[in-house]
Amino acid sequence: MTTSLPVKRVGHTALEVSVIGLGSAPIGGMYRTVSQEQVNEMVQYALSNGIRFIDTAPFYGEGQAERYLGAALAQVSRTNYVLSSKVGRLITPEGKVVFDFSRDGVLRSVEESLQRLQLDYIDILLVHDPDDHYRQALDGAFPALVDLRRQGVIKAIGAGMNQWQMEADFARNVDVDCFLLAGRYTLLEQGAIDEFFPLCLQKGIGVFLGGVFNSGILASGPRPGAKYNYQDAPAEIVERVRRIEAVCTRFGVPLRIAAAQFPLAHPAVTALVLGAESVDEVAANLQALHTPIPAELWDALRHEGLLHEAAPIPH
View 1 (cartoon, helix red, strand yellow):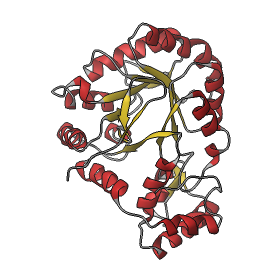
View 2 (tube, one colour; view 1 turned 180 degrees about the vertical axis):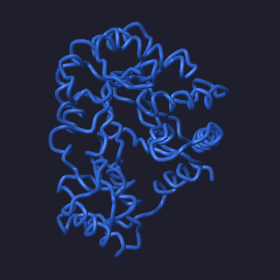
View 3 (tube, one colour; view 1 turned 180 degrees about the horizontal axis):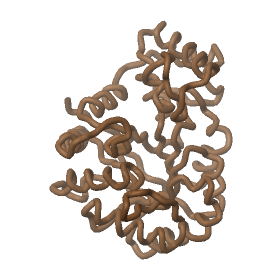
View 4 (cartoon, helix red, strand yellow; view 1 turned 90 degrees about the horizontal axis):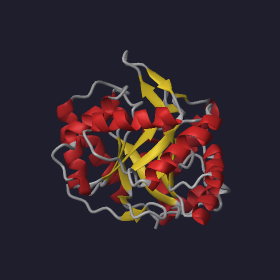
């Protein structure tokens, strides 16, 4: 399988990323043990099939994801991909992860990430989940990232979170280039569309979307034990997904395929970050993007009140 992927520019920067990015949380051992050999094969497959954007973080496996990626990318030309990582969590000598959004913490985090990744630079740095550390992120982490960008050490800065409200606040108070938003603009929920997306479009801020399957329920369907927001899905979410899946089934489209394609239709969205731990999972993500979906499916979802009235639909 060889695919061609469109690319988009990240905000006002010179960076261009493929509309599908490779998320590395699973190779940190999120679900099961993954070997270096598996990661090597997966990364090579992703690059050879048009993926030019890779996202990682120190938090994923207490540094394991970055170490695996560093080894996998060692023989790859640095100009062949754009890499994003994150700051705000440090790994102690005992292997524990602790929050630190101070300036010194950010600089230490960047240095340690570069060592694990075996790289000279990281393209994009995101402040990672500062939900309970707003003031320190605003006063410590972001000024440090702005300085690193001014020095040319990094090319873009932003935040990665599971909520858009604080990211909107950062957009108004910091000169950011991009955001990673997880789970808040999906086939299941489109709350970001009224305020956050228009703000990002107005300011020229790129948006990467993670968690487009809402922790799994949009991939597995409304079966017992399905996850939503990293927990067992509540009854009202299960029922809504059941209704969405019923429409998809009517048109012969797997729920997962519709969930993968829907978010990319919004003009504020630069790329989807889809986590994977194997060649098969990367192939499935790419296939989902290229599977035809009849326009009538989206019309039916909107007619049944399952899509925001203003949500753009894929063509």
